[in-house]
Length: 262
Picture 1 (cartoon, rainbow, N blue to C red):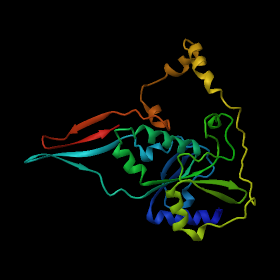
Picture 2 (picture 1 turned 180 degrees about the vertical axis):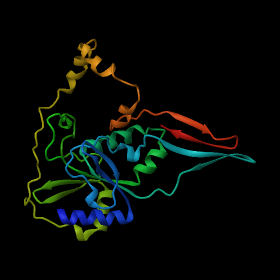
Picture 3 (picture 1 turned 90 degrees about the vertical axis):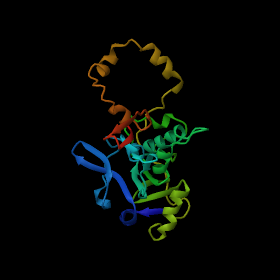
Picture 4 (picture 1 turned 60 degrees about the vertical axis):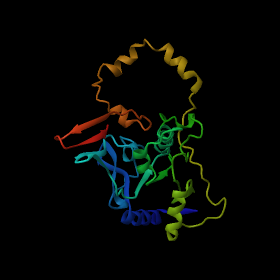
């Protein structure tokens, strides 16, 4: 099945009526970031990757976990509620795969991070495969990776000529197709060839990475990175799989405060 380009535009505009839709948005000539869109026309469909990943939509750079208020009989905690249904549109497979790794991190045998999964479960990821990967991309070096990988996505769209081929990956993706059936069209098997070869380089030898790092540990090349470093920590936020955080508690007066994760 597939969406024509016009049908996809109409679908996204329809989803915006009932959901908070995030997509790559052009900020200036050199910067494209994820932001909420009011129509499909705000979506930047020319950029390969945004300056920051989609991670921040679900795993925020800073978020309030709950409010604290002193009561007569103790302390009361109030958590955020009423989250809107959220859709991430135009996500690349490498960013979407990052969510699958965060899912494992925040769901241990005896612990599940309710704050992360409250947003994750409320979010549908509609990814678009990469038709022209950069020569610096290396997603094909990982198991189940590549410019058309579906791990972490709910729907994966692949642009073939003048339409988007649809891969339904999860139940959340299936609901999008079933809830808006008038936008999707069926195609005969074999009518469209799916593969977009792009310009992927040779696969990286993952087994050799550790030895190469050991051999280059004292290299002066690292000076070009650590000397200008301001220790701002933004690299942790930009990376689609970094998860480091700190917990802080703010006291506004003697009766109330909040706990934040940053």
